[in-house]
Image 1 (tube, helix red, strand yellow):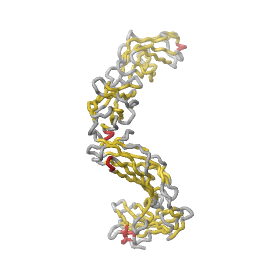
Image 2: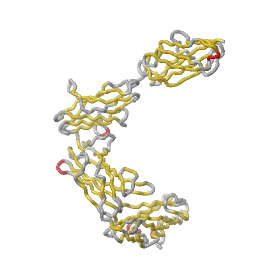
Image 3: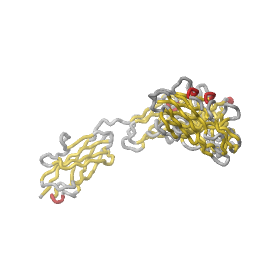
Length: 514
């Protein structure tokens, strides 16, 4: 057993031992669990917590090289991980059941602890790797089946733009951009490890990006930015950085290289993937972005058309499409991308603003000419902002009532419990429709004896009718009705209520007879 001092000379944290319970195992018939044990000491008497990570990897063909994913084992003194724990923060022991895979790079494979870390709640930290782990028996030999079959993918390489839109365009004018792709990688023997994607552009220039499957107890499983899955069949997201200064023009995915956990790789070409276009708006550009109407009255109609207009210069073979995206993608949407040429030479495309949306901020505009050139604008592409925010017509005028009537105007006391009253109003709502109506009933002394409130059908200027039932017996006498109109914007006007406006046409009353 190595002395604690060998773990970290002069430090408070040290690994006293790290070893597999067996030196050799036969996993050729299927995965076999082997226990890994380790012991951590901490000479800091104030420490009450110790934790860390142990990494295991498959040794490569040359000393000090490794292939396949890193198996990350988290541990802590509280036993909150899959590693069992015992002892105190000053002297703790741990064990973990490592499942030796059935497939590897050799028939006689070797598994190695490549890194060991420890930390305490007093700021102590320790990391061992390389030669520092040589004092421990942290290797395991295993008989395994040799994986000679490379990983595959499902022949689908989907474009996943890194921006919030869905267009295969990247702006590059002194700033870096990015583009994303997704694929399903499979390997049914040793499992998928990592891959790389290559894009080829103008003049044969190339761009490369790597991705890998990772798994750890605290972070879970993922491949690129996609979580979940396992290394036998996993969905991967690949982010390709488009450096500043990248040549403008069309770039295509020319190759994908996939590598499994045994180090077997294969490069796939002839890929069916959408190309991307990199542009700096050098030859094709636009200016004078406007929206009309703006503000738009979207208080009542579900769909409210707005024209986005601009001047375009440098187009070859005309402009074939203009794509407009909004922040969040919901407040306004585009369903037609073919532009209309206006009498002054400007171009317009329609977008729809939906009912009740207070703002629609244009996040991106992509202009494509007949020759395939592209100009980009907006934060969606990290491009110049077109400065377009479509707002809603402000609600500055509260709704009013011009007339009010009530039926019935008289009824016996015995019928007040279940008799329905009808309130007919003529209202003026010049901006936002009325969508709430509250009704109040007062006795001859001014005491409120009934209240009903709720939503009504959106109503602009015109007739509004509502019904109410007292659901109680009233004593004979004269009763007065008041109401409050509230519109979509929250503005209200009250009539016949304390502090409210006088009822148009005089008090609204009904009589209860004996």
